[in-house]
Image 1 (cartoon, chains in turn blue, green):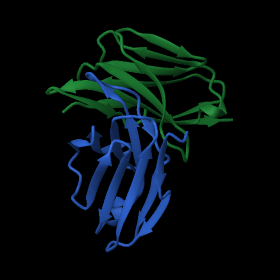
Image 2 (cartoon, rainbow over the protein chains, first blue to last red):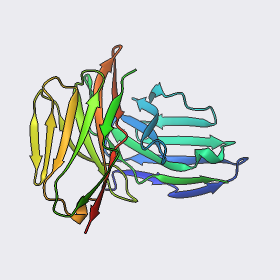
Image 3 (cartoon, each protein chain N blue to C red):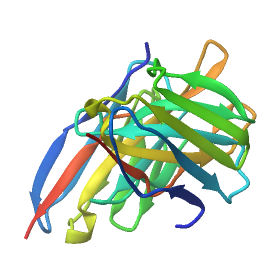
Length: 115
Length: 113
């Protein structure tokens, strides 16, 4: 599937670096999500943006900073990360209409390693 | 808060055997979705169930939504090596006028040849 793209696919960074993950959806959806996937927590929701507004922040540390400039683009800005932040970061999008969430389409993910 | 529990966490089956994973919610759900993630891949949507007691089939996969809309199951008949992966359920619910979708922790299926 190429509806949701993520860059970069792999990222290695030191604890003092600043980097950004990018996600783009080409499906006309109005909601976008960031998930963290690791061995300990298989699929952990981090942030939700609905119509560009952040509607959910699941107690994510401030070293992760999301940005949603429009309904097609989503960024995750990273700074002063810890080794335990190493994981697969998945972006997803969906259409939210009325009072229901429809199926989510996931990107391929960014494999992040923090040294 | 609302929880979606999924069991078992891991399952090894011989090729050709059946497989079932179960999903249970602490609260009534408005809908439930199922996803499959192949090793090294990303979750891919399989199906959504909305009605109480609903049963849907996709070839060898059978999905059920409980009468109380608090549990669901995915059953695979005569597993094949292509069924390998992690199966996630995701429950949709309304909480405090907000709609949420919560993923279970998944069931990782291994097929023994």
